Length: 161
Image (cartoon, rainbow, N blue to C red; front, side):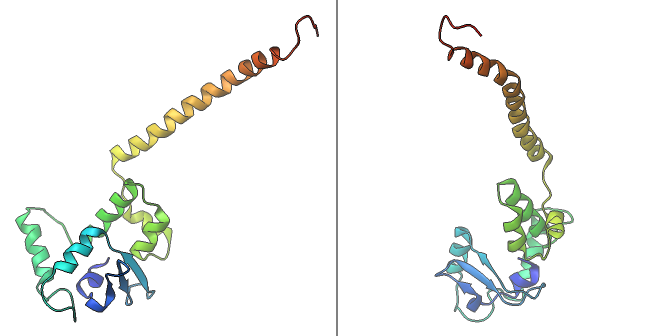
């Protein structure tokens, strides 16, 4: 979710029964729903106070910035959370189409800007195709010989060609 969507979220947009957050006012102008992970559901359901108005007070942004300072993270903005989520989502097997919908993007080019893949993840993905390519090449070379052997067993003994 975008910073404005998070800090502007109202209780009427949190649907615990369906496990979604409904976003009516978005940057793209399109309504979208965000499925809540269990931890999000748990944290929101345990927040004190009534279930009316905004979820977060005016101090929420300051609290985020203070947490970044306490954690001694340099140059980290709230928006960086979107990039971090997008990268981990894809590296853990999420599809780009699903990520596009979750982030509220209108095109895949924007989604690709968010899905930064770690070098180790790219290497692991390459290794998957390498083993498949090796076995495919092996199959291509051995298949004709295997077929000839199988065919030779079909010819009755004593019959010559």
